Length: 194
Image (cartoon, rainbow, N blue to C red; front, side, top):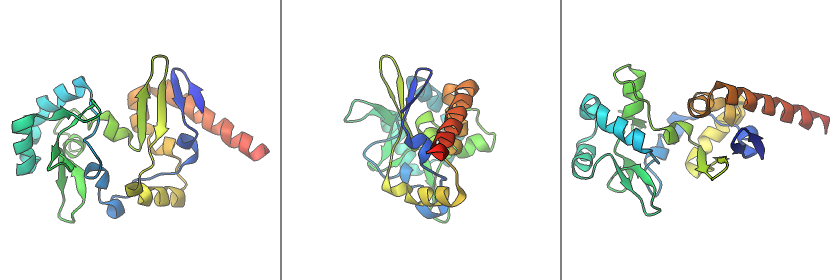
């Protein structure tokens, strides 16, 4: 474990290699699982605000769920998460012509139609954050649907913390990320000296 500021990072953040491979995984992380993506109250307000801009991008089933239950709900663990269609895919997903699941919020944001990005928990995946009273744990969540991403990451030699540079900076800031890079350099150097 590496401590940076008020965060504690698991060694896997530095050791695991990872690059999403949508052609292989087909976006299963937005479909499989026991509940939706964790979201904050601020993210719920943002999702509700952008609904008019993305409404036509949503599936009819997703529009029905949102109309009936809203963009988010409380799961069985008491966590606030995005609502699901038929207990499976997130309401903000859509499937392209090739059957790959994509995020409507992310697509609209990348196209410049909305200023809001996808929820931070999605942007950070496969990293999960756990808040404690005196620190935030930053852990790698290993999941079988991401095996193609691990294979591609190893092939391309991209450490997890590098792959997640943008969302890690979004959450913790540039200075914190520079310290992560320095910690990675020191770990690599120490590994060579062994």
